[in-house]
Length: 298
Ligand code: NCD
Image 1 (cartoon, helix red, strand yellow):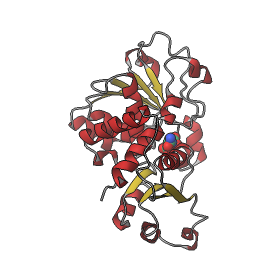
Image 2 (cartoon, helix red, strand yellow):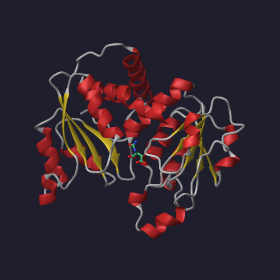
Image 3 (cartoon, rainbow, N blue to C red):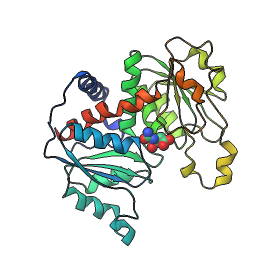
Image 4 (cartoon, rainbow, N blue to C red):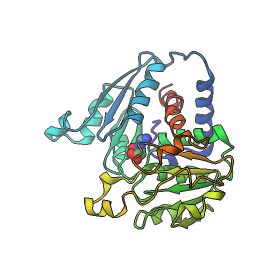
């Protein structure tokens, strides 16, 4: 079965093929109807704007239809039905399931009970592979992916987009500079595994130490919803902010990315600068997710 649960399920060749396909889709004037008659189930048990809407739009552009659930409260899970049973049932209604769930490992579990492909659209603090593919696609619009220097700024502990991206970048020989508030560092399990594979990871406390050497600055939101209590969140809230001032004297080719939503970690004054690519990045969710849907259902 063609599940996409973790970015680690994809080889570098498969990632390249998906990005190439997204790029072909992006440059074509009309879309084929290759998924006409197919049904995509969107099960989103956590808030979402971009991921949900862009999967739905991608499916529509390929001629297919989407059905979905937006919350546990609105489904029979509120009556006590298990995720496993829900997935077994939805497998009978749809040709692919896109799942977002607050628990790490939920998508993997779902894939064990599904009789159709499952795409992980975010499992707690785990992984977010479709986001990573569009992140890579966005970087590649500006520069080759090989050997770049990437700053990962923010909540690297709970941020699933950073986890998936770090794994993927290691396939391309990137150097990773991690900058996070105390306690929100990249999990050692991930850092150790990547270092073992030969990826250089350098930790910093302040982004200004390193900004001048970066090709990509990947900013993330503090994942408040994963904190045990609000006191621990407020200890780190608003502790970093990318401003136009910070970006004086950076490399000309620097791009600033953010999976969005942003709170206060990027000053709106940055939006006008040539480095800002986060809104293009969110738009890139369409061709990339079209390529993914074709891969699993085509
Ligand atoms: C991210 C997520 O859900 O992990 N959002 C997204 O899909 N673009 C990042 C976040 O919520 O901070």
